[in-house]
Length: 236
Image 1 (cartoon, one colour):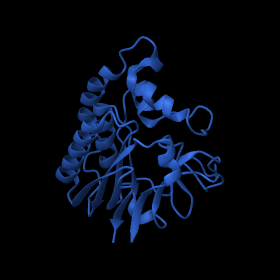
Image 2: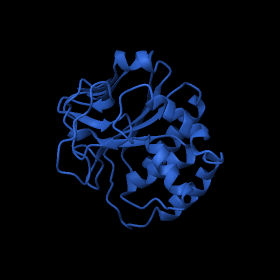
Image 3: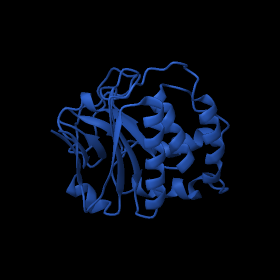
Image 4: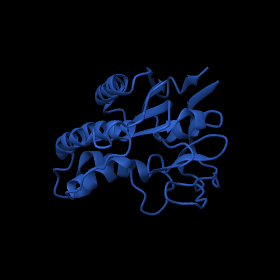
């Protein structure tokens, strides 16, 4: 059995946090057309413009919310929430490139709803996946690197028995569990930190679920973890 667990020390800092979860089994993530989702991403980039209208970048509500959250725990210098990085690229006139079907789909949903979304390969997890406060030293190698850059003490991380899966909450993920074209069982998450965007979380989760089922097949189960329900079984 594998579970997702929001650990108590994390919830003491972020009691209103909700994690939307999709457990996807038997999907086909092999691309038939490497640029299939490019038009979808362009549409979502246009939709994302509503999230960066403030003259001062940090006063855009999505950015401000996650900057404030990151101030509450130890982070690597310069680390930013994944949705801020996406919005920043689009606001500067950049485009989000195609990677593989599942990543393209969730990047589009992330832009459309202004929420951080991530995904990992369930089959690569070593035991439970936990949203936790790092002890420090958790093993972590990210994409494009071949060296261990361990988590800092007090950092928010997703981790399993081997090490960190995502550092600085949703800043950068481990190459060990990342979504590749060969993934068939995926763990998807959408995060809202302060309890004020529950309805948008539900809508984003439902749209992501529908697109995965339509485009990639398999079965998709939906959950929301919070302080009342901090554990979700993801694999029997």
